[in-house]
Length: 114
Length: 115
Image (cartoon, rainbow over all chains, first blue to last red; front, side, top):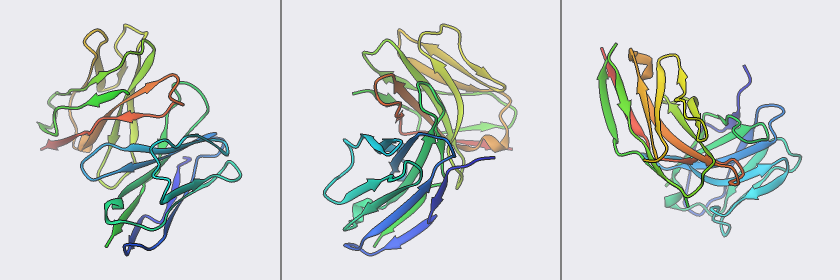
């Protein structure tokens, strides 16, 4: 069964260091989302891609976060410099293009900033 | 902006019993979708059930059903014949047509099914 792949599963980094997360969506899924989930809360959208174009990055802290999906397939989310408050689960999801299409989630990357 | 409220941070139910998780939302849109997602411990989030706002009939998926009250902006999830594998975080989510199909989640309800 096709799945959304994310790596690494866990990452510990020191404050002010750079960190990157990778996501490979389900083949054929045009839409890709990055969500951040703070412990005990629901996921919050950081950025959404349609193919290689950004659809919504209004909640992405652009002074330190960047995201790209250069060929419209896999995607990278980067944080530089990391701050203590960035500790969270970073979830990637993908879906077919269109209204009411199911979003499939990866297992996430658990980031701890020390 | 749409808000999704789940007022029950934690719930517990015995195996084989029925439990209902609550969700309310706030929107001025007339056309939207509502979802319940399940996030088991250390596993990825999966879709449990979805409801189109323009449909009056409540959605059902096996042991899972919803009570959708559009006027009250309420969307509760009923789990019948609860199983140990139902133990998970449950998130209610809202999607509106012009949001780029992104999901807006509530804070979740932690459900524990006990033997």
